[in-house]
Length: 240
Image (cartoon, rainbow, N blue to C red):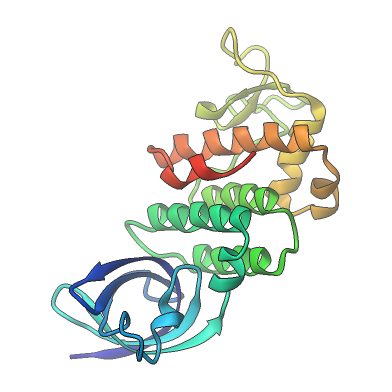
């Protein structure tokens, strides 16, 4: 059976039998992989701790009939323990890996892999607030998947200008002519924050008031779930 190596981030795990675990990985070059890690639930396992959610590892696998088999795992980023030690970081990371899992169902993406690893690293180092890190990740992830939002020109007709109406189904802010009656309106501060999160302008994003951050977070959540075509179960646990 062919053997291969790759870098991977652990998205989720499931128990299998008494000592094994099924691990879902997003790899750097092989896309999403579901593999069996034999014996990792035993206390004497050599690499069980390296295959927990949010961990990044260099793994060796061989191809199986239905599931691949993990034979080696060397830690590249021990983010799991640091993230799970903080509840807000843990819930944000849970949304991230769930989103990455859904966005890579049909095929993998090097960009999605690198984005997720960078976001988990940032969470573990407490570089920015967990909610801001999550919202920035979500906007960038859906953009990479082909659903880039517009927070400047009208998302429907392209009309140039500063628009306040937002319609997530149409792709962001829209002009008054394209806005349906009753469309929610955002203030300038919230739209500016959304743009900053999308572009990685952390100096501006971190200076936004908590109320503005919360309003932007609601828009990001709605936008992401609409374009995924389904809800994110872990999102309900994120504190806004």
